[in-house]
Each structure stands twice: as structure tokens, then as C-alpha cells.
Length: 133
Image (cartoon, rainbow, N blue to C red; front, side, top):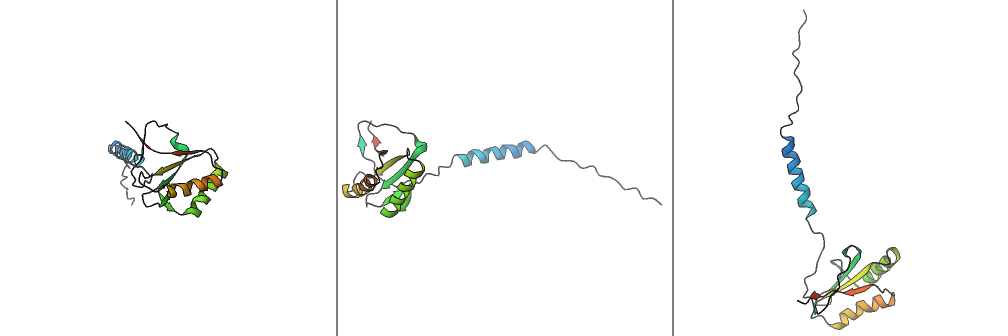
């Protein structure tokens, strides 16, 4: 005696695919809005005239009110700063170095950073200030 098997047809529900695509689109939009730039909380000095530079090719050196140095938001000492600038000069010499210092920081702290740049003969340097309006 032959037993007939009942075949079930395989069906993929496509009705919820638009919901999945919509949720995926929202997720991608939210992830792309996250700002990965680390900043140090400082009070910017003001200037009467400012020049905007290309943000893609920048290395940021932050100096807070206590004189601590941060490279792209990460704490560093003078040796690490010198090594980072040397590596930067060897790989991409046209990269602009931005010095972002607190308004009330002692000039000696900024001068130590400038001395490192001067010894390494790095000439593409900018001071970041708050635009005076």
C-alpha cells in the first residue's frame, strides 16, 4: 500500500520585508550621525578674523587650562606628540596641525608644543579660535 505524502508548499512572507528595510534604513541613518570626534572642554580665544580649513586633513593638538596635551582627543605627553608629528610628516606632509588651546592656559604650555613643531620643522600649523561676531 502506497502512502501519499501531503506536500506543503514553502512560502516566504514578503509582506514584512518593507518593514525590515525601513528599520534597516533608520538604523543606518542613526549610525552615520554619530560623531566620533573626541573633544576637550576648553574656552576658545576670540579673533577678529578667521580662516576656514579643510577638515579632512587635520591633526588636532588640544591644550587644556592645566596644560595637558591631547592629540585628537586622546591624552599624550611630549614624546608621544613628537612621535605622532614625525609619523604624520613622513606619511602625509601636507596635513595641517591645528593647535586648540584654552583661552586662559599659560603661554609656556603652548610654547612647548610650538618648540616640538619647530624642531621637527613642521610648517603647516594653525591656531583655532572662536569666530568673533
